[in-house]
Length: 437
Image (cartoon, rainbow, N blue to C red; front, side, top):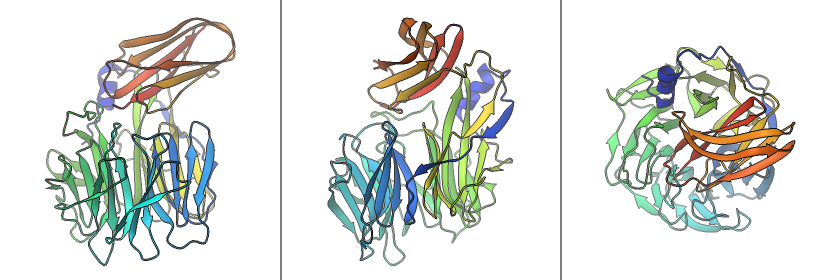
């Protein structure tokens, strides 16, 4: 059952504006050519490429890579990273040391120097997660085939960690943090769910095959139900998990899982995309264990496309999505980037020679909206909500050809997706920004 709010908006508001055709933007090499690469993840305006000898990170604002590896050092392996939520230069990383114990480090200079804050007996750190709105709560999980893994929580942006029990997992592979108290935790052969920070848990095993461990998981909030500090539970739009038998989608009404891809997956990612005020869609990507990248749009689980293309060298091992595009890590080394699945529509007035971007995105409390125009003329820059209601006019007046920027610092608005619309001399171009509070 596909219950995404944005797709419902399409059906209700723009059912006549169907997307006509879909193409995949080509893959381009982004960087991190490292034979020790083991995965990618993103946080804030950074993309992290973790390796057995440390990590590399890409800053989307400066478009620069930074190397934080220790070549030849045993026990410097990193498997997860998250940018600090409350500290500008804070970097929190999880990995494994030379004695196969999990490690959690934090740094206040983006990894140039770091402090070990926890050594886990429960094996390597497999994932780190932060709430989708800015606050100091972080979560981590570990995996070991010898002793019980650990599920950990930090309430001070990664400086100290406490052990949380009761989830029932022996080995944990993945977690998704929606609110500061709400976490989906995967491991063994089921997904556990808490809405109170780990005091109580719900077992979401349902009809998943017994004895099949979960490799990866994805949980996305419905856009009508973004979390807030005073809200305990977030309605999830999609919850997916993959084991040796395939990729499954959870039905929150029946408590049952439906197989949506008969291939075992090692990574899943999903994102919302927009073109125009109301043309919007979802993209779901999965990396299979046999080295393919599969994708589908708008929850059309009957029609997956193989978009691996000519990615070289090596085998795809991880996929990540954010507002800057789709990213794939290769086992042979290197991170590749694509703009994603691009629908070709007949929406009039979209200008191919205008460009509009926002940094940071997602943002809180402010973002800078930058646009470039090849011609001079009268410009109108406005922000709309997803219903099409005007939120704010940021600029109206004459501009010269070139690059222009305006800061948007919304007041009194809730978390959500907002549309940026630039009009110049009868032409229009659209963008989107995500406010997380």
